Image 1: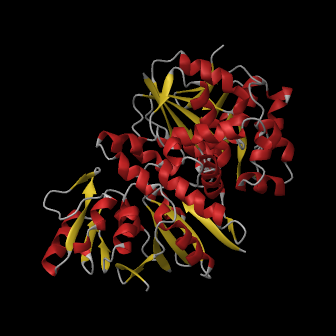
Image 2 (image 1 turned 180 degrees about the horizontal axis):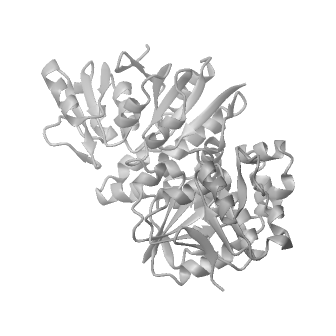
Length: 235
Length: 235
């Protein structure tokens, strides 16, 4: 039987072999939720960068620059890290260079995997279908917050473990812990997460509507896939 | 209000400042459960070592050598890693040099903390009382399995968060996740852990009775404290 494992922090990536794996990178609040939303609204491609300066340099190549540091939009960037910014019809067909505190770093640390895809609650069922139709082992890489484990990414990992359980089995304790937390939280994730550190951080920034949106399941039927360093969706 | 944080793996220790903290090291299966049991049966002191050869060298200084690698007793060692071995009256007043795959490594990585104590379900209520009477911030360091997060150490961390909640507040998401898992598991921890990787590993080694014993709460009223590199209990 195929296996699914969960890496709860990018700082634990050295423990996992990646060459035989489809890696699902998740940063619910808010990088991978933004990316999913952007593709659902017609963005052509997203180039993810771990470093700010690399991202900014893409402006000269006709890319929109997007992302955040410490939850806030970067000065001089075209776009921030709220999914609502990516619903703009003017962005259709455009290219985006994206950098965030945790999410794009998690993508960078997943390098060497057989395949890297982007997961969020917004495209949960599409990710589940994609993984069911893949022959690869699965590793979910949670972006966390500056290396620390967070609840919302863990819950998404748990949602994948739960929804794949009849076909792909948990490889270790991290997927079991994530699955149990998801089953505890799934009826009301906003309530479950109200004490979490990232939700408290974002509520201070007055973006509670982002949180509710990012915790909505199965809104978009797309799966962004990394192809030569750039994310695209298959039509 | 004082805070409690949880480091879910020794490989995440670089994320935590330790100088102002009482660190509770936990390796439920089975290092810290063995240490607690040994002190409850009259051992004078335990010198923990991350490396096998350092531990073996203590034989010349009159120490009993004890511990495991990959869950099994080390050849040439006097004692293994089953708590039942430490109930032997012949060990009363003796000194032990101890090394295990994960537990003693977690102690080594906690170096620099204001204080390091040993926690297990066996001395849970005594650890709770000890922390309530301390002025320090608290960090629970889970030994895990070769860097990976495990369920049983996470549950113990969650037990501490839960039992201290009226006096010491969770500092981040890891303590919240641990607390919720503990509350989900506490009525029947043996059942909750039956799919966990370490329990499956130990069941293969035919030591199910060790697991049940190590998941027993509040059997011993002692707290081992590290003092100049050696664990002792205060009488």
